[in-house]
Amino acid sequence: RDLVRSRGLGDVYKRQHCPSVMKEPTFEIIAADTSYSDMKSPDMRGKAASAVILDPYKVEVRGCVADGQEIQYYLTPGKHGFGDPFVGRPLPFSEENKGWWVKAKYELKDGEADRYILQKAEGFKVDYKDIPGKELKAKFKASEPPLSLVFRISISVEEYLFLFFLILYILIFLIILIVLILVLLLVSLLISFITVF
Image (cartoon, rainbow, N blue to C red; front, side, top):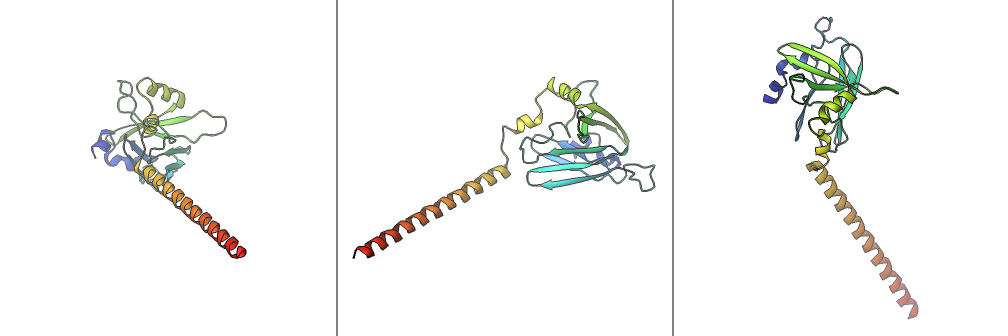
């Protein structure tokens, strides 16, 4: 709750035009309820609609915002390091960046440079602005390494379990293979012993 309040969200996240991501070093929160994204529209939602697609190794967020532009990016709850390193993070601290954080990434079209949406919320007042990916990367590069670089150093519980069962299956397969080879050797020895006598 304190994290949500520190981002200036509270209950205002329902009035936002795409899912809100709050990224911390050990977890991510995704608030995907955008029921009141356009209060002027008859259905109070307008054009904004998003899907949050979960699987064991990544989360995909895709959809369109209030002005019809499409968003699409990946998050990596298992710390795999290939998800977007900026979505869900506050901009590095400075007077200019105060209160702004990275809301979403626009879908990358052929030949286009990547672009992000920044958001700042104060009470029920929500401001958005676009920023080119190059400029955003420069802001983070000046202060700290992207979160995905930190994530690559560590390994999650899911990855430990995956590796454990993978190694276990490989060992079982090898044991079965060795047993089959031994059985074949014994059968061939028995056959040769029988044929001799």
